[in-house]
Image (cartoon, rainbow, N blue to C red):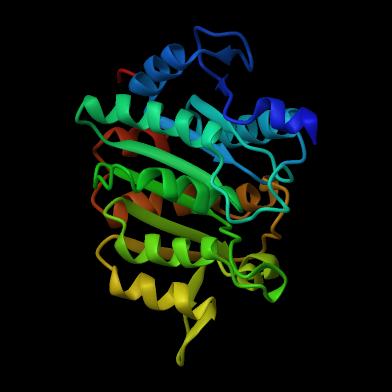
Length: 256
C-alpha cells in the first residue's frame, strides 16, 4: 500500500525517442512531451508501478506512438472510493492545460477504474479538442453500494464537453457489471442504465463501441481483439482523422 501511494501522480515517458525507457518525468518534461506527442495514458487498475509501465508500453507499441503515463494504482483508495486523489489530478491538470494552450487536439486514454478519474480531471477544461478513450470503463456501485463518486461519474458523462468514447467488449462481464459503460439494447441498456441515459442526453459528446472476445484484464485482451481499430472509430466518429488525435490513433510518424 505504501509503495503504491508513493508513486501516485508520477509521470513516465513511454516509447519517447529522446528519453530512456520508462524515464520518470518532471512536470515540465511531461508538459513538453505531451505538447509534442499529444497523448496521455492513465490507468488505475494495475497492481503496481511496473505493471502500469508494462501495460502502457503494450498500448503504445500497438498504436505505434509515444505517450506519457500518469500513474495511479488500483488499490490505494479502495477503502475510500469517493476520493479523487489530488496527486493524480494535479498531474493530469498540468499536462492537459499545457497541451490545450497549443489550441490543438489531445488524446487521453484510460482503462477500467482510471476512466472516471480521467473524465473528472478533464471536466475542468470541458474542451471539444480533447478525446477521452475509455477502455473497459469499470465504475459503478461496487458491491451494490451507491456512492457520491458514482453520481459524479454519471453527471460527468451527461455534461462533459470533451469527446468521450467508451470501448467495451461483449465478453467483458466485469465492465458491464461495474457500471462504467452502457450500450443500447432493444429495451434499455447493457451495463448501467443511469450511465446509458446520461450518454444519450449528451450524445453529441459521448458515444461507445462494443468489440468482442476480450476479457477485462489484461489490456492484451483488448489489444488482441481490436482495441486500436476501435480507437480509430472513435476519432473518425467526431471527424478527428486529420488532427493530432488522428495522427496518434493511426500511428502516423511524428512530423509527417
